[in-house]
Image (tube, rainbow, N blue to C red):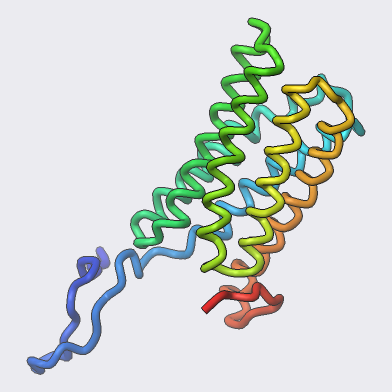
Length: 211
């Protein structure tokens, strides 16, 4: 049997009653895609950031490419589309954009690195992402402490990595790698909070929502 859901924003009435019972929220029949989007972002960021710290050889960045295309990229992009369906502008813009970031990163490494993209070009790429992340950080001040932490750390990560590319200073890039590790850990925390709150029907860890 096919389930029939009310149209987003439709008014539901009690059978036989002319009095509206409630208004159905857009996408209310969809599961929350935020834990999935955060998980895709976190895992991909964690692996790349450990490479950026210098603990792994630079050639190991190849292990990130599959994650960047499939998990951080396509899966996170899907999470963004589902956030649009749920009427969540912030989640839709964030997940869709960072899904696009990871797909562009995959393309950059897979196709353009062999053409010799220089440091300033990559620096510009990263600093522009820092600008985007900075204004999303301002929007995150109305979401939760957990999500805001992710955006604060991610903004710092992009800035450090961008400066490292512009200046050619490897040590700054390594610091950016460690801040990236912290960013990924914060995103995993937020994802864990969301998915366990659903399965346990109560919050297991605090996220400090802003009212």
